[in-house]
Image 1 (cartoon, rainbow, N blue to C red):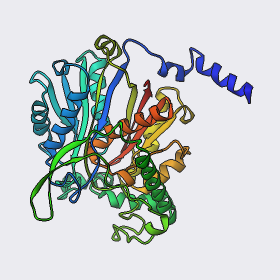
Image 2 (tube, rainbow, N blue to C red):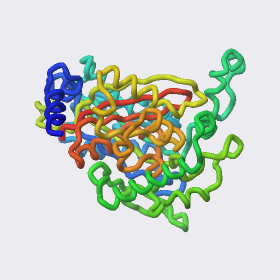
Image 3 (cartoon, rainbow, N blue to C red):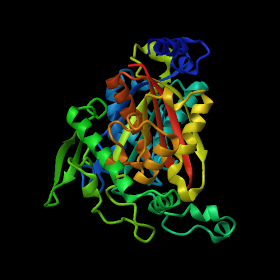
Amino acid sequence: MAAERVSSLMKHLSPNNPLATITSKNPDDIVITLAIRTPLCKAKKGGFKDTSLEYLMYAILKATRERMGFSSDLVEDICMGNVSDGKAAYKARAASLAAGFPNTAGASSINRFCSSGLKATADIAHAIASGSIEVGIAAGAESMTAGGDAVDKPFDEAILSLSQEARDCMEQMGWTSENVARDFGLTRETLDAYAAESFRRAEAAQKAGWFDDEIVPITTKVKDANGELQTVTLTKDEGIRPGTTAEGLGKIRAAFPQWGPMTTGGNASQVTDGASAVVLMKRTKAIQLGLPVLAKYVGSTVAGLAPRVMGIGPTVAIPKLLKQHGLSLADCDVIEVNEAFATMAVYTRDFLKLDWLKMNPRGGAIALGHPLGATGTRQIATGLSECRRAKKKVLLTSMCIGTGMGMAGLFVNEA
């Protein structure tokens, strides 16, 4: 055993070791100096049900400006992930100005469905790496109270007639979940057991206060039973259901019986309102500003697959990203996989042979919720918080993407 530990240590210290490469500290590294999120609230009936998308954007950007530790004049661009609002770009710009960022800082929105927050992070990181900007903010915000991501009318038949996969892009997410269950022989019992564990972990993490350093309190207004607006300050995730069991979940009826019996409101991600943000710059800039470095952004990638089984996107994105950096899953300490559905989470875990102890140790979207455009940055905030708590180094994040894609991101904790 001692010899194995020595061998492992020597391998880690080897200059040709990929793990040593990504954990090394270099002046041009892209680093994260702040990663925060709002509480995640139940859409249509939770704390943000009467809060507009632009206010969610404003709230997370204001919290970011107040905590980032340097003048907002230095921020050159803000990229906001959002899926369901076609006017998100207008709202992101207005929210950034209202939050106290100068008009010299640009703002945009981006939509790659559930990976939008990670895509925003990648785009800001790449802009910094290329010298286009020095300091940027990647964020995500979603009011699923106001809207979702369903296709409201068929696409042009001239397009759909040319490709079955083009037609499959119109399949609703619940439909694709049932496809995954059917194609890969998943059982309802397995899915409910997975979901129950997600709830158990999230409940334990909340009771232990593990989320406290990633969540910023948000003051907003919510209508009471009489329709009167009341000012409230929200501090905790609302979707966690204490005492959830697989047996209890097994009694919930199918959510999409027209497509299959496996996916339910208990073993799928919750419909949620929320926002999150990360601040990025080069290591040299962070040192110049005297800022603590939370983490290093190593890289990210996207990969495609058949739209009808879009949920298994992480099974193509994760191997691609690890191969790019010469790493294996054994090198990753914390793995955040978005639980869009238990179907895709179970298949991803089993197909990639993920260590379930490393995967979503605080629970995932089944218990916490999935505000579409915010999840990518939310995973970063949660994953890095867990790395700090557990004194771990390498964070891997991933999610499936509607229409048949997966994305993955790689980070190194330095806090």
